[in-house]
Length: 516
Image 1 (cartoon, one colour):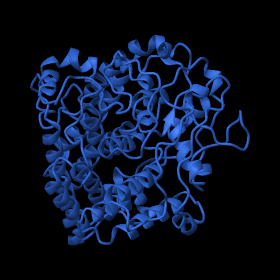
Image 2 (cartoon, one colour):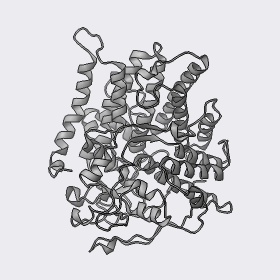
Image 3 (cartoon, one colour):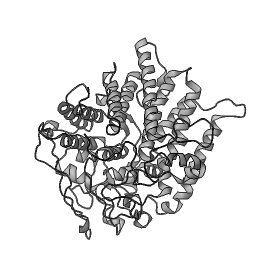
Image 4 (cartoon, helix red, strand yellow):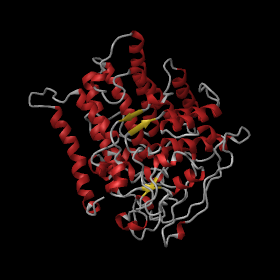
């Protein structure tokens, strides 16, 4: 990242946050009141803002300097903001606006426009917009908690927030609407013109979109297992008993053939490196995916070296030549993989749900699909390994021995039926964590929900005692831009939190206690 970035970020952020909505209104209506922007343009805007590919610094603030760090996937060697920043639990408002604003100003605004154009007229497009809306909004609510969902687009100010429970219920309803319509359309044999707005994802294949919708519903159902296990089971089994079902093959993965912006952040700016957690787990397991995800360290040739999050950084040059991300892993942006879906099913089966198979076989298929996705070899031997465990972490940079620590997990790879359910869940989530890389948002959410995989705590905590070093960040506080524009709405959201508006307050589904 350019050195002047930190100095200008707040000014640029404010400009972008407000100009996006103004631009949308300008291009959406001309002087005669007739719409000018096309449906393909609207969908293109949605695809490109769920994960912001360009400019890369906006993705850096949208996800990389929050969820990608707190998930244990990546770490930064850069001493941002004088060493007191998101990585050390001092949440910077000028950064965290970008985890909120692009979704509303460039995704939800566009899905709202599509609904007005197509609902009850061109329902194929409306159904697709609902799937993308839920994909975008579950990231927002899983980051902040309460948010504007049911009241968005009414034109009434202030915009009141729904509780996270209300948002989840609404998302399940929206998914059911979309899945039902597309399924009925498939069964009717009528052709669809979805390819007009879906040229690069599934090329208008409604069956694949239904499988994605069911898989997304399964993901959201699993998120609420501890807070509402009855609803979780109901929604999860809807997806597995559906006539079309869920994603099962790697050719059904939902991804964009757009280079992932973290590639530039890693290799262009050297602002992001492999994490210490990734080094501990992948090296400890002798995982064949290690070389598929990361590059060998320039500083330590033939070795993979990770950086610990939340440390005292003396100089960026001390760790910037540790392992960066591989060219393969940043070649596209992926939203949902077949491997993730198998791991979701494995957990569901562990809970006694009808997931179309037993937990062990679904777990093993998840590992195999991940190996297949990344062209890694020897999955069978890997799954038979009952001795390898995460390794201790040693910070190889001179002068940083204070960061050295023992491994925090002893979970092995091979399935063991005599293990407790908690041990089996740790095994499932640890492998899902590996397979979902580099989607730090999903990994962070699942870590908060389950406590797995076990991650190294930060050493340097600049939250002023607000955030526990061992528990980590649980959410992001509502952004200042939203406080300024919709203060009463933010107040309605704060009233629906189970605590103060800060990074230590747990979300609705993020409860304490056992996973079973």
